[in-house]
Image (cartoon, rainbow, N blue to C red; front, side):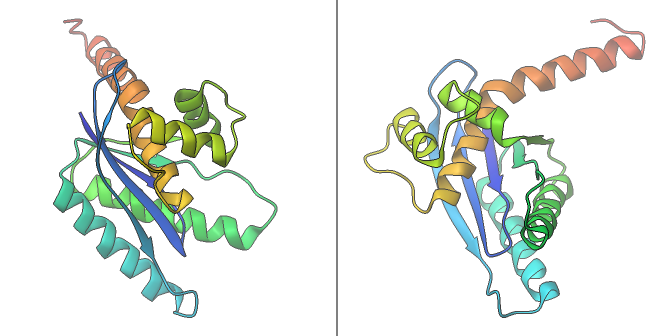
Length: 175
């Protein structure tokens, strides 16, 4: 399974692509950081992010997209920018007809490090180790995006199969 993970941000949006199967190490395909200029108007920044994510989905042809779920922070301005970037990421996946799953930061941390309380350094160390990289992906936004993709490979595949089975039962055909 090839998954494109997105760590949404309006100034820096991390994108990571991995391939793998549940229970086995994933393989790095690529990672990117899409940047927008804080001096630009919001519509221009969102349009740039939309075009970049759409291009990355077309280039890497993932089977699914995993996006970090926006959580409440004290800085409302930061939350708004992150939420807007998240919406663009979800839209890019949906527009391509891909399943899109969101994960909380603690879900990703637990999947990748075994602890939902892991810090950024621990996450980067584990992503580097799990993908067998010579050096850590930089900046941290890229490592976070790769962690999202790994999380989806390991947890999302199972989640998707359960959802599909539930839907078949709901429709009356438990195959």
